Amino acid sequence: MNRLITLLFTVFIMATSVFSQTLSVRQKKLATIAALEAQGDLVRLEPAIREALDKGVTINEIKEAFSQLYAYTGFPRSLNALGVLSKVLESNNGKWQEGKPWTRPAEWDDATKTLKNGTEIQTKLSGKPFDYTFCPQDDYYLKSHLFGDIFAGDQLSAADREIVTVAALSALKGVAPQLAAHKAGAVNMGNTQAQVDELCKYLSENGLSQCDAASDACAGSWPKGNPNDAYAKYFTGNSHLAPIQPKNLAAGEKTVQSYANVTFEPGCRNNWHVHHGAHQILICVGGEGIYQEWGKPAIRLKPGDIIDIPEGAKHWHGATANSWFQHLASHVHVGDPESNEWLEPVNDEQYAEANK
Image (cartoon, rainbow, N blue to C red):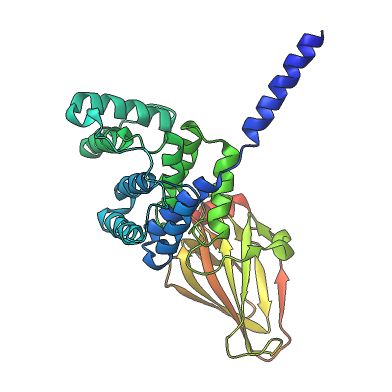
């Protein structure tokens, strides 16, 4: 009995250790330089590389990370990042670790083996066989080159490669499907879900991500702000609010127009509502959204579109079902006391019709 209790306790401790595992400082530094490489921010990248080297990331690991990222961010940014690394290393003086010596992978001389190994790695990462028959060229490139040639290097583990990839994709716009796939793939390749969640939160909190830490909903170029808790009861889904104060006004000074940035996660929309004493202007700055006035067809919104909502018009607005959406909202006073009249939610049938 005592042996059984001891065994169960040991299993519990091991399980707790696995599921509570967090990212190391080294992994966070790898993620930081990967995100900055993807953003092309060479000014921030130089000190970030120095810090990564100081925290134990090796020179050859950084070379491997930037080389791998050419497949995700393009050769120009990969080469630019390697150029910054070369510049940093001019002041090395032996204080940073070279790391494991680089050796040419044997697979590079055997195309059949490279394709076989790459197919196996891609299957493990995806969680199932992935055959892109729509475009056989890309199917071969993915299997043979990306997961074959590139993953054949031994400087980074498969788990670390996915941390680098998730960080880079998080820093880019327009790659939400690939980001979602690699967040799942990061777990398949040896990271815990807790580590992936921590990675996304770390990137978001440090200005390294275009995307919301809790989802694949991108925050856009404008500030996302905080969860819109005060108005959550008037929304279906999750939204975020960032008030905007004109630079030339002192704290507390009034303006004839109020400004705010609202970010809607996919599927999020506000209730039907009416603005009294003001008309509202929406300036769309990111993602794809919907605006609809009562009794009129829904209008699809993309960055650059502007909606001027008449005072007293019953309406709603929000994200499409499959995209985040971000708009700036401004209320222009028309003389009467200003107020919002919140009405019934946009039901699923109305929302589905608006998404057609």
